[in-house]
Length: 100
Image (tube, rainbow, N blue to C red; front, side, top):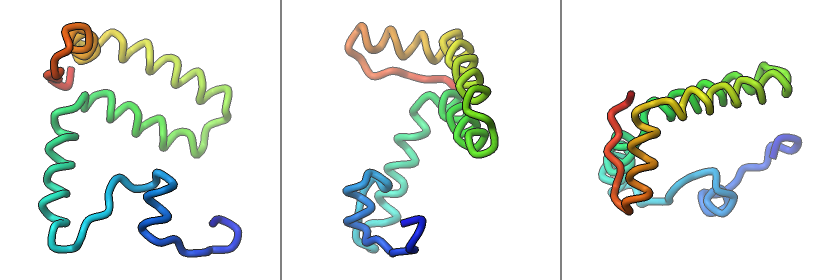
């Protein structure tokens, strides 16, 4: 892809795991709202930290990035959302995250 600029179909992208779902245009808004609702119920602080690490990975040396990731894991394990996620897993319930 990077070298030849070949375009890929939605099916190809889906097989590669680069997209989540293929939907017809008339269902796009409905499915987008479902994805947004799913994301909003998740551990938003962890999402933000992960996104930050993704962007930093583009310009940070590997060793430094791995250390940043390690530090972020430690910080994330100290959050209320982490505790809620672990307890929900142990109790076999859906977690209720609060973004803290």
